[in-house]
Length: 288
Ligand SMILES: NC(=O)c1ccc[n+]([C@@H]2O[C@H](COP(=O)([O-])OP(=O)(O)OC[C@H]3O[C@@H](n4cnc5c(N)ncnc54)[C@H](O)[C@@H]3O)[C@@H](O)[C@H]2O)c1
Image 1 (tube, rainbow, N blue to C red):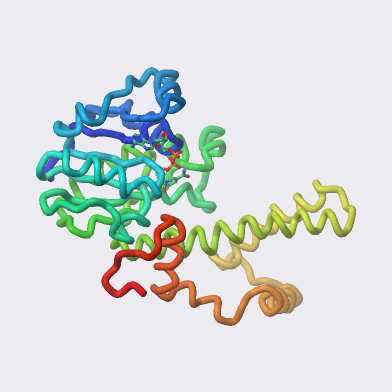
Image 2 (cartoon, rainbow, N blue to C red):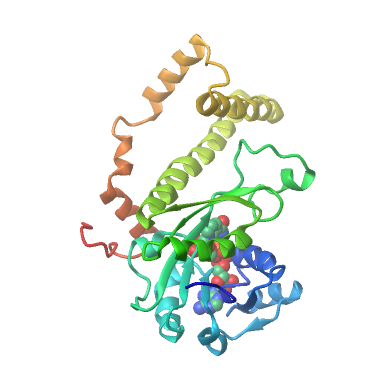
């Protein structure tokens, strides 16, 4: 595909659809906003975006963006891919369905995935709008991790401007493979990082409950130490103190299982993705 002009955004009234749609609406692309739920259509109407019926517009689209729940992607792609025009591209927003091979396949359709990285914890934010934009896609700059396994470098170059608009402001689009993207999400950022975020919240609640101290005292101590722990671990701003390292060793022994890195075994990735998609097993040739 050399140039994308006409786009369909399916699931345009959902969480990602509303974010992406707001950015696409300010672009020069011709965008058809498609949404099947009445509540989603109301959200679109409230923002002044007119809903289209996907079956009426899909044959005219160069790019079909599926912003629908991952567990719906097999059914939605089975309905829509046969109606796409030859040479068009199907873009999903999460690697799970592409990795598990549940997207309806056609030889003359290309398949890509683009996932927002969200603004970095190390981003130098300057404005109130940037500080307020934790998710990205509004004011704070973020990167995007994307995969286009059956696309050439020229195909990636053609798709990248659309991705930059969808998730803008964007500094870098990192092109990786679908499998690498699946190791980023879920393994690195959901299995590990989001889990640790909720784990820290649980530790905060436990601290307050066990000691009876005022919650703001525990919050102040935790939030400052999240910042310094990340700065030291990732940016080597200064070393952890000797006593801190002893406490860290105790924590690792008490909390982390010795074999935790098995989450990077591809069989484990297959299992977690099958669980996310609510399917028996992923349809990968070597999958267990
Ligand atoms: N929510 C996030 O933080 C986030 C972040 C990155 C990527 N994603 C990915 O974005 C995609 C969408 O997730 P979401 O959280 O926005 O989901 P969502 O549930 O908020 O929205 C999905 C929308 O799709 C609509 N829909 C469902 N079936 C449809 C169909 N056949 N035709 C038209 N519309 C249909 C639903 O009514 C809903 O409005 C998923 O692939 C998800 O993994 C989500």
